[in-house]
Image 1 (tube, each protein chain N blue to C red):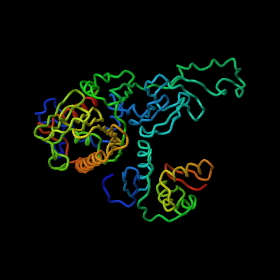
Image 2 (cartoon, rainbow over the protein chains, first blue to last red):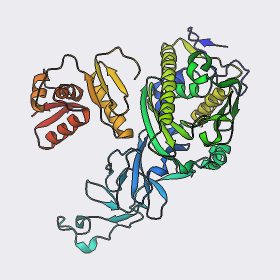
Image 3 (spheres, helix red, strand yellow):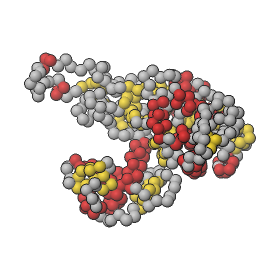
Image 4 (cartoon, one colour):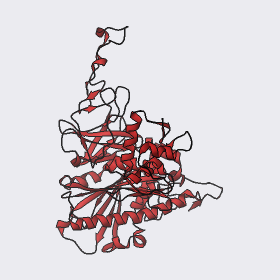
Length: 380
Length: 113
């Protein structure tokens, strides 16, 4: 049952049973700034979140930065070829060390150096060197040089952030002891994606859009296609929506779309005669298209409770796109713009305060999972 | 952003992402977020009611009407008359602050010393 803010202000927890009357996340969780503050810790600091694609940092010393909520990390490839992540914070006095560096324009460094007092770290995070002023006591008359014991390279190294990967997709977890491993959080998404040659494809395009709605509003829109018939006329041409399947797993869900006419196997990265759109809690999607030999990802990055950035990346066999691939990306952009119109309109309604708790339909079980995971995170 | 009801307009020439706003400092915030994830710069498309200028401190002087400083966005909008992008203006402001010519009386506002 839809619950209005009619003075009674009645809301209830999201029921595990989608047929119950309280099956949606209360509206305040989309509009309240305190909820976004809570989500920084309870969602984005506890679960595995996407960092970037390791094909963009192929050489030792290649790096990019990634900001999640208030936290920024350096994601770098070390001398052994492993991808590591560290807070972009110097162990000396907390200075931010490297400038913002996007995955699409990565940097390279032999070592990580803080510009403030030139503390320098190896790519494994160990403290490599400090200036002589940290070893000699010339300015302090109360000490001799022999009083200085020196800094242990490991104890004074950078603060590491947990990393793990699904194929070339690198994920971060900020928790000291993550409640789930990446394999546990990803479930069959991991084996499904790892069966595909994702690492053979190169980053080709990135589009970043700012949208005026809560990140979960867009996440919910991505998770269902009941709106497609009315709003994505170009996109649904050639797709049999009636034969679509919405697959729900613990922390991800998949929208399978069957094409009316089969396309050549050479035109797609996967063998299934369908498109597969994976949503991975909390804010990442992997888009396996049915009509393109490539794939895409979305990062649905909150700016605050009422804005997010959609970071759309496209991967093809070569970074230089063919005319058909350009056209494909253009169509994908059109789809995004159509969705932005929808979710901004929805968010205007939510911000009016009229709705206390919405009502999901029985076929919005992917969305129901999304709302349940949010509630579970808030209550943890 | 997808709404177009406001006065100031800026866009990324590389990927055509556009921002429209009544507060030119929103463009500065947009530039910072966009640059952080793409490396792209942002250029002005519409800067109503901003005086034309050719020099940074001149622009700040002409825009200032009290001691609390001029918004970085308004400075950037003014310098667009000289063909400067948002990133180029912020870089120039940074350089001039480090030489002591400018200071920041409040967040993202600058004034001539």
